[in-house]
Length: 391
Image (cartoon, one colour):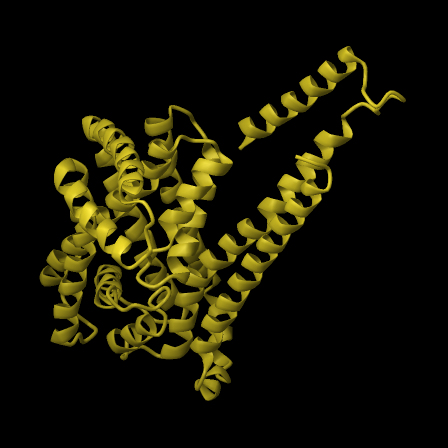
């Protein structure tokens, strides 16, 4: 590559990064404006802030639940990366968890996280495409299974405890339907992983359809490439199936993630000066999530608030309780994810600049001595290895 081509490529990558950051900021701003539109009078209620200050410990507990939510997700990916790629990569697991949740929260039906995780693991962390594909998809499956298990357990608990807050019967039906929908995706993925030939037949149908629509140029080449990726994913997923204890740990972590997320609502209500049964709050919160699962908006925006209002209409200061719940359970994840997206390229650029400064000056002939070149390359390689290990 020529010297003029390198700056051009760097500028193109920089503009792409800036455009991605700007897009994410616009999405975040749009979601926040949607939340507060038409609620100006309720926003002027300042007494709730005094109550929060008096009950600050519950806000601390709610924040701890947010951190536990991220921690459990990171532990899941730490275990899966070790199982699929054979390496312990704690910082990579943390970034994979944060990026996945961030893009899940800004895309309809929470469907955007896995592609970004696959790209991050395969391109930046140099994990082979098979394991890099299996890690996010397997993580999605075990999380959704853990989510449904938690929802089922809360349905059972709700039938066995006294109720202090009214709940409309249609909400229960919607929650049951939402939990069922949540289980469809992992069931289909597992079936596709087990029945390879059936999957290839279905893929052939869609590839041919894409060819007729002029979206696919070469049917055979596309099928061959897709089948190769599918085989890598299938082999990696079978390795995970053999380690049943890892699957169970993943489902358990998904259960704990869901529980941590639902506990945020309980601590927010307590911080707002109300005393409620924590088990009932867990049940009603998961019912709220399940009842809006199939709403195709980023992070169920709008639907989640309406569901929370409907379920917790008997609470005082419903607007502020809802907003604080959304800030902790939704916007905090978006903010953390945005920070990772913004600062990761900056950190990488600083590291590359430090590595480049260690290169020896070029001699008059235009080439450094052989020994100096080897020493410089060794220093740069050592620093890169150290950076990789630290991540």
